[in-house]
Figure 1 (cartoon, rainbow, N blue to C red):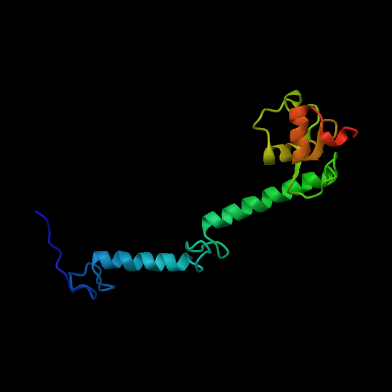
Figure 2 (figure 1 turned 90 degrees about the vertical axis):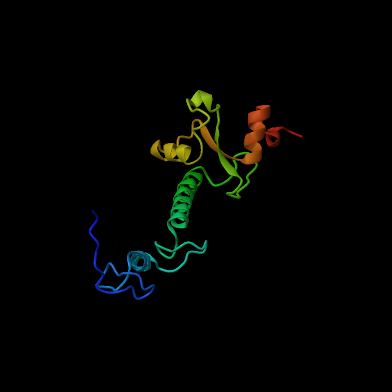
Length: 157
């Protein structure tokens, strides 16, 4: 047989028996109030995406995305600075167009097709920016070199 709890008072919000006499609330309203208190203690406002801001005015997702983007951009710029910040073929200097090229091909360097982006940039930094098999090319020159075997800029007109 279940013991019946004798309520000392009624909930202030719904007039049901109050389980928590210190607050004068029933179990449902006590949980609601507790959640609001916990959330408000962590919340620093609202992020631009609409989620509650937790870290430096941003939600966790937006903050971690921004942190990763800034970190990978710094690594990329460090590598591009080491290789001269311009295409070795045509002289293009817009950083959005520049890529790292394997001079003798990716396979001969022992790199698979997944060895790209920040993974490649970190490897280049770790190995002191080797120049014997890597150069900075714009995307057009790099694609032409991969497809044709040479860049059209190097062909005499």
